[in-house]
Structure formats: C-alpha cells, structure tokens
Length: 305
Image (cartoon, rainbow, N blue to C red; front, top):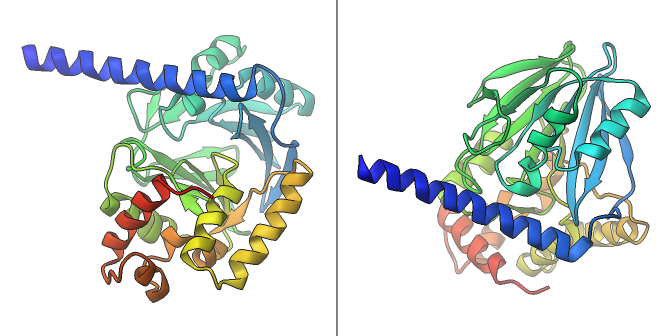
C-alpha cells in the first residue's frame, strides 16, 4: 500500500515539474502575446485544417468537416485563440484531440472546457491529460461530423502519446495525421518516456503504413532545426538542401512549414530512414535499424546546428 501511495505522489510531482518547466520556457522565450507564424488554412479531402500558432513554436489545429461544419481542435493550449477562430468561422466545436499530456499541448484543455458554452468530448491516451473524458488506444475510432478518425498509439515521447489519422467519409483524398511530438518535419520527439524500439514502431511501422500522400500536421515549428541535423546525417542529399532553402523562405515570411506528407518524410527524415545504408553508416555502421534509431536520437539530443 505504501509503495502505491508513493508511486502516486511521485507521478504527481513529475507532472507538476513538467508543467512548470514548459510554462517557464514558453513564457520566457515568447512572452504572453505574439504569434510565431501566420494563420493558414489547408484543404484536405473533405476537411479544412486551420493552422493556429501558439506559444513560441507550438501548433494547434482546428479540423472542420466541410459538409456539417462540425469541428475538433488538436492540442488547444491557447483556448482564447481557439474560441475566437471558432466564432469567426461559425463552426460547431464539439471535440478536443489531445496528443499527449505535456503542458504545451494539454495545458489549455481545462480552461477551454470551462470557457466553452457546449459540451466537449476530450480525447487522449494518458490519465495525466486534463479534462479528458474519452480515453483512447490503438485503433479506436470516432467521427468529426462525417470525417473518420482512427487513433494510433505511439508511445515513446510519452507513454500515452496518440496520433490521430483523419480521413473523409467517402475515403477520397489523402487524409491527414496529427502527430504531436512523435513525428516532426525532418525529425521526431525526444525519448522522454520510451525506447528506440517504440519510436521505430511509431515511425517505421504505424505512421509509415499510412498512404504516402497523407498530410502530416506536427506539434511544433522545428523544421529548420531538424533539417539541419538531417543535412548533417546526409550531407550530399539534394532533397534535404532544397527543403532547407524552401523552409528558410517560409520562415522569413513567418509562414508555417506544415504540413508535410508521409511520403516526403520518408525521403529526408533520418528517423524514418534508419533502414538506409547511408544513415546506418552515419550511426557508426549499424545494420540494425532500431540501434540506428537510438544512436541518431542520442546524437540529435546534443546536436548544435
């Protein structure tokens, strides 16, 4: 009994420290106002995805079913901007999709639920997520109006991380996947609570199995930093160099670099290329892709662009 009580206390302390860390880091770097990127809309087969910047480099997403105008928001850390956008575009918000429990993704859940006049279904895969009332796991599904949502369990960055694959009711169009801190453009999240095996399964089994033209909406604007490391791993890659130049132009105009696609991530993201001999050679001649994954992540953790 004592051990279970102590485990509960330790979990609460860890959650609070994580929350304070992200709060201090984001407020210190960006302040209480200002946006790091412009607001943009992306049309993806039956849905509209509104890209909403938050904090220093986070992205929230408002997913709108074109036919019913029902909507869901992904990781609403800035509830005020979410509500403003919903009201301006007259859509029916009824769902929250939380990728993981870190404050800069889930920290706005409780405030949004209190501020919102209607009921909100709050989805997530971790009991540490505030206001969650629908816990999901691998292959659970639900709808946003006529859109279909399938949950992908991708533990590693956190043990309860969920990616959400959203497709139209008729199956037409590429669909979109909201990857939080599992898959970024040109990178992946730190292995805070998991292993190389888990990240390999997330990136190279589950996410790689999606159609190549699936749009990837990740949780942060990390593209230039990640692509700098990708160039370090594959210095002769023209694909990577061209992407860096494109991203520089986008960021100079404060335009977001999201979305990417699953197919193009396979062409430049070193963490999705751990089967490639050139990437394995960079990782010390490893021939095991899981060992390559682990060595790349350790190197990236200390990499200076």
